[in-house]
Amino acid sequence: MRVGDQVMLGDDAGEVVFSIDADEYAEEYLRSQWEYLQKGVMINFKKYGLIHYEQAEDDLQLVARAAAS
Image (cartoon, rainbow, N blue to C red; front, side):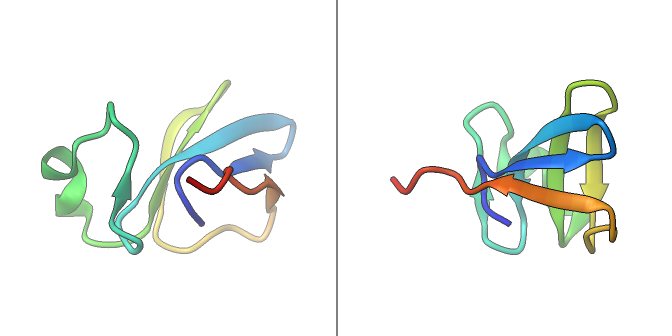
């Protein structure tokens, strides 16, 4: 997963806000504040809020890839 990818978990939409594995972070998520997690991605869901995944759950679905920069 890459920063900006759109996902769904059940009925809740989310966006990948950083990927430690890809070393990509959205502007408002500083590497220095989150690198202690060591691996995985953080997704900001509208209903659930921030959820960190070391591995994606089976019911996490990719809806759209982020636009290439």
